[in-house]
Each structure stands twice: as structure tokens, then as C-alpha cells.
Image (tube, rainbow, N blue to C red; front, top):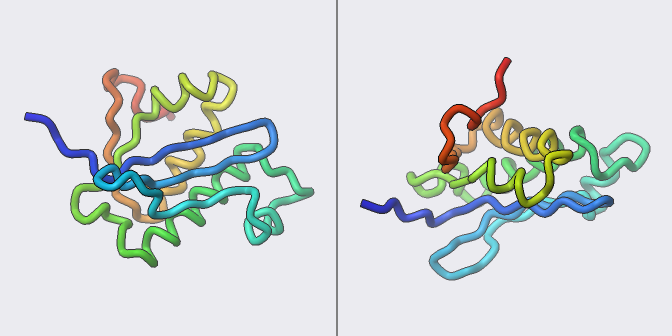
Length: 127
């Protein structure tokens, strides 16, 4: 039996910016987004560093707040799906701390995340 993954977290990490989107797969639209490109987010970062783990954490916190405002922090009961291993693979091993910073910020702010990792041993960082 396959689980319908309605809401999915997608991350975009470049050398300069970090963007996190929650996509509604039923209609293919982005429902909530947060990015270091935004003036409000960029202004809160120290020295304008918009692509480090602290910036990723801020993006995760802003995304969590916006999900709560939209009433989607629980993903309408189904949760927000994220495949961390896949995101790390796509972004490169050097960006794993940024990926985890976003995931942990969402989790710490009460967003219900469902990890879709196939390898259960690597789904959360140790210690």
C-alpha cells in the first residue's frame, strides 16, 4: 500500500542562497516558501552570510512559521514528507549540515515531518 505524499519539502542550495519550498503534489504548486534571498531573512543574518548552516536554520524557522500561519504545520494530518538522503545526494555531501539545519529547525518548531529515507540508520544524525 503506497502512502500519498501530498506535501513534500524541496530544498535549493546554491553558493549564495538557500531556498526551502513545501510543494502540494496534488496540484503541483508551491504552498509555502522561505529563502535567504528575501530581505527580511537576509537582514537577520550576521554579516550577510546567506549560505551557511545558521542561515539554513533561519530559513527552516521562517518556513515553520509560515506553515503554521497557513495551517499546514501538520500537513493536514499527513505530515510533510522529506527524503533527507536524497536531498543530501542532490546537494552534495558538503551541504549536508545545511540540509539537516533546515530539517531540525522545522522539527524543533513543531512541524510534523515524515522522513522517507530508505536507509533507516542514517535518517537522523547521531549525537
